[in-house]
Amino acid sequence: MIRRFLAPRPRTIERDTLPFTLADGRDIEVQRVRNPRARRLKLSVDERGARLTLPPRASHASGERFLAEHRDWLAAQLAHYAAAAPPPLERNATGELPLRGDSLPLQWSVGRYAKVEARSDGGAAGHLVFVAPERATQTSLHRALRDFYEGQARGDVGRWLPHYLPTLPRPPRRLQFKRMSSQWGSLSPDGNVVLDLSLVLARPSAFEYVLVHELCHLLHADHSRRFWREVEARFPAWREERDYFRREGRALKATLRSLLGGDR
Image 1 (cartoon, rainbow, N blue to C red):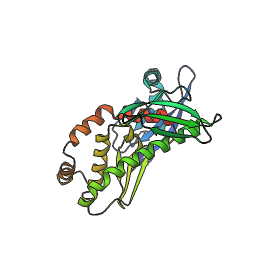
Image 2 (image 1 turned 180 degrees about the vertical axis):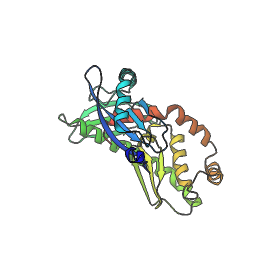
Image 3 (image 1 turned 120 degrees about the horizontal axis):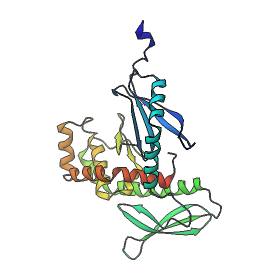
Image 4 (image 1 turned 30 degrees about the horizontal axis):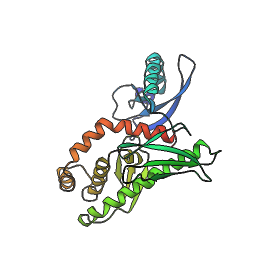
């Protein structure tokens, strides 16, 4: 009889959002995650917001009580991350943009269509120009910047990929860039490579390592010793780049999220 009153054990991670009001009256959304591997209720906060994790048999009511008990802690953590968040894209105010581990000066100009252009300064790193109509919406500015970053990222991959293709059983079926919450890349069973768009903000060697990592999954789908030997043969400095992401990864993702807005 007791078993009927317990929440069923989920086979996969389930996600939804939970509205919540802070002590100061602000309404926020908390991501609620039911994780079959979780052993206890857990509340965490990062630059993406608040996350409530429930173990398989915890009820929603117990999760909401747990959230209410930690209301003050939650407000303090959200304030901390808000203060540390990178500045958003702001027309005529944003004076530089990150690219390939560097920050390039940004100029604003009026034009018919919203676009970002990279201009060379006599062999130096150069600068960027953001062209946009006077009445351009924030959405159109975000879209133009995203298109620019994806174009730059595809150009980088286009330079690196021919070097590795001869040692692979087949080329990737498709290459796609997305804003990924935690991963840097993935390879689907049918050979589609997905890379995190924020890689274009990282130093180029780190970006190239992630590409090599995913290409090696065409040889071995797991992370076995055989897989890492293939990575080592193609990219001996992979450990340095892995450490780089451990230090800088969250900041890279947070910067892109701030520049492109909350929507994916």
